[in-house]
Amino acid sequence: MWKRKGNKQAQNGEGQFFIKLSKDLITTQVPGIIIIMKANAVGKKYSEVERAYMAGFLDADGAIMATIEKHQEKKFRFRVRITLKITQRDKANLIWFLKKFCVGHIRKNRGTHDWIVRDQKAIELLLNLISPYLTVKRNQVVIAKQILRKRIKSLQDLLNVARLADTLSRFNVRSKNRRKNFTSMIQEHFSPND
Image (tube, rainbow, N blue to C red; front, side, top):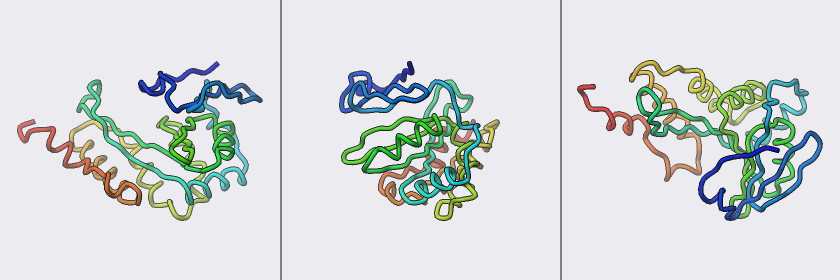
């Protein structure tokens, strides 16, 4: 039904499981990852309770992360990506998010499971849906929305987005030791004559 291209580990099925989605049914095929949907249902109407429920999970057990990756097809050879992640020990709630919002995938991570959304349009829609109900991550959502809405037309635009990505990464406590300084990474890539 749905298929997902992944890294070599995912293609080899190492430590991951696949779940096929139909309108009413989820069935497990291979251990490791729960697969994304065919159609994006994020634009559908959701009740206030459902939006607040997701906001609570994101506030408590979620992360909004920004990364800047080298990308040869982009004008300035970098792309900006926002990732939304909610981590739980029990995957039942994450399966509910996957079925309800029809975006992302679930990945087993040591003793926990992560619902990960990387689709930029879906993330923007999700953040718009739940932002009125967030408390802890409200500032992160503001920064993430600025990153998502910024069109990179010049090197200065890219540097401004990199600064926003650096600001967003400071909020993520678990990534303190792994945090990259995206602004300096981009500045090092371009010579002063460019």
